[in-house]
Image 1 (cartoon, rainbow over the protein chains, first blue to last red):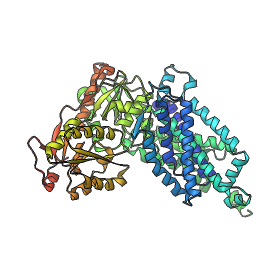
Image 2 (cartoon, helix red, strand yellow):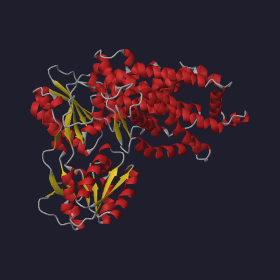
Image 3 (cartoon, helix red, strand yellow):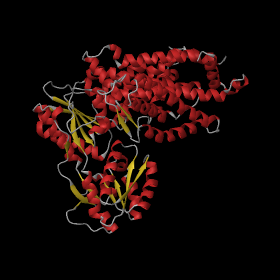
Image 4 (spheres, rainbow over the protein chains, first blue to last red):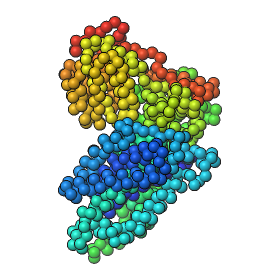
Length: 313
Length: 316
């Protein structure tokens, strides 16, 4: 139990980083109503761009910015494949993801794994800083939880502002009712491309942060990212859905969902004395429970009055 | 919502039957990246050797990340926050995570091909100068190239087949290419993305070459059956970088044993824990014995004459 509590900051930091990615996914999955499979590729693109630029002496913040821009490009490709070439959204994402494999390899100098040594480069976040903080060698201002937490809050603020503007509102309208949005004179195709760009920009930023945190970019690092992202979105909605009605809080809930996901993984690793080959099954069961409990609660413990009420609806 | 947490916590407590550890025991954490024959053998060798040396003074916790980087980080965080006395990182991603996580807990690697590539260190000369050391699974590549020409003196063209997702493969491909070209053989690399593409690219490699070479590539090792199904009917012999693949698909291999590599690492661990050897001065170790193995079934089917000095590959 003790080791689990000690390992919690690591899990929280990792969850926060994935939370940035989950917020990106929330934009396509919930606001635009598109399952965007580009993310498995663009996550790695972000990591690759970030690591390579830092290795070439770029400032960390500029490297992150570049990662966002390149991530937005990948989203644009998916968006244009969908809107200008008439390919279904899910297939467009798969196509981009497929192509990104080679692009990612090329970015990393045709290597499958690029290591970025924490002793050699000034990184924004690193697993190493957690230990340094515990030993008092670094202040809380450099703690990954603080740094990524601040980045997350800033992103939520910017997104909250953006989705309140005319453009952002029309983007949300595009997702909730495309025919109605078109009838109002909204260019839905442009909005879909824009939404995918914003989303993949965030995903790439998350990849660039994770690559620094684990101190390497790997061609496989995005594999299954969409599963983790969706789990975070759904866990966040299930747990905080009733609490958080405001859009900004909903985004915060998604980020918290990612943290919970990694706390669960950490719990399975730290607490189970069983054969670690069962780890994946255990994580699936626990995440499954999270998703099922609210449903059971509604189904078996619902107040009778609610049933009567629906008759008038 | 409280119910959900209650159930989760109850489950965690049920699972949390971690034995209380006595203080005087050395605690060693093993993080293996994925379930894989060679890595399993290395872990086993490590445990056996460490137990043989200081078995009654050490408690070993074995974790497997099932190929997931996120889980790998969680495992390493657990070890580090638990302040274990030594970490065994089995394969490259585990080593990278461990190196990112701690600068003072000794970390031994095994099944790593190149430490300087894995850690992004320049001018790394077998001694890291930090908390990293371990064993490398690199069989001498010049000897591997020589093995090809020894077994197939008439070979003109060699195809090198590897997965572009593997960090270590490219490094080996470059060196083997240079070594073979020195011996006057033309070499062409054939890389594939994942197992789905492998059969297509393997077919192309068969069309091009007299002999096919594969480095120590995890994707190929995991799908050696495909390689055999393509190259065997095409009548092209395969020289592999690791023994496991050779058992299924290869004609010959310059073999190191991952079990032996693991036990070498285990003895290093014992000396760090027990004799307080300074890990920063401990050089990277290589397998002591290399053996020229041939696969009797495949060599017979392809009509390959085995020169002296080769041993039949033992069945698993």
